[in-house]
Image 1 (cartoon, rainbow, N blue to C red):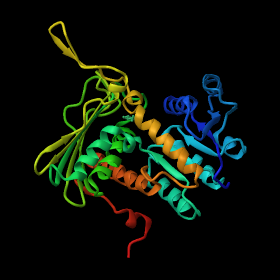
Image 2: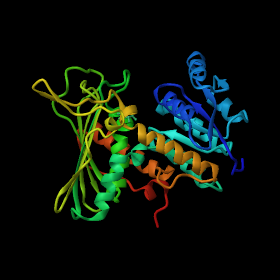
Image 3: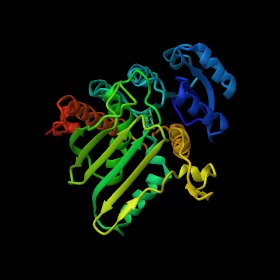
Image 4: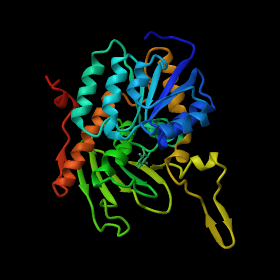
Length: 349
Ligand code: ISE
């Protein structure tokens, strides 16, 4: 399908937490976009969402929506293992895709997508690593680039969810949650991750299905060391932190910047000092999701993908690192080299 057009008719596939969030954002208004349809195997849930957001059409199957002619572009927000088939269908139909992270849980599936994508005349695939649009991360990146604190030496991140998704195992902490840090840290630091190690210590007694917390150590090609603590069943709040340790100082992300938007202040009262935490990532990254969607719509209308967003290749790189970390988990915390994207794609000289 050829663009530019005035309005991009967007279809949302998957009406769970993130599909619904994207649909509501579209319904609130994104310049150049209209929400044309939603799809979900759970048709009842899709119909409820369609009524809430004013989407004209409901499909029981995302592939059917892609082939229907009713949409010009799709957002894929189904569970991770189902991303690949829908991406293939959308690319075959020539539709721009915004796929929720991760691209795919395995490198093998991601490679097949890259091969198809590389053969296209124009890029169609954007992956929803929304932290690249978050004002907090963007501010840190600008400050680092200014050089005021000198060269980057280390980073420390912490990523805590209130409750783990049920039915997932320890590897999902890496492939579903840590992928955000695996994407955003090289983007901040400007150097790919080349070596990793997965570690765990005393596990929380509050969750049986997976080891929680987990600690990831990652080293980038230029020697910067990244520590990442993941705790997906932390109970108290959704808490994402990041500190960049430099030669002459450290740059810390302002705590919970999204609360400023929600007018949740740090309150001192009754002999105490309190600040609120969001319950999950939607309020914390609300501004990022909106900016990501706006950039994707604008780029799709002019036949390209947003410059700021994670590309298919960026996302393959992330999946390679995540898969190596899961290997380290299965090999008792072995320190492992991360295969280069060129070696995985057979593009080495
Ligand atoms: C979830 O799927 C997300 O993408 C959130 O941003 C992340 O913080 C959470 O850990 C994931 O499970």
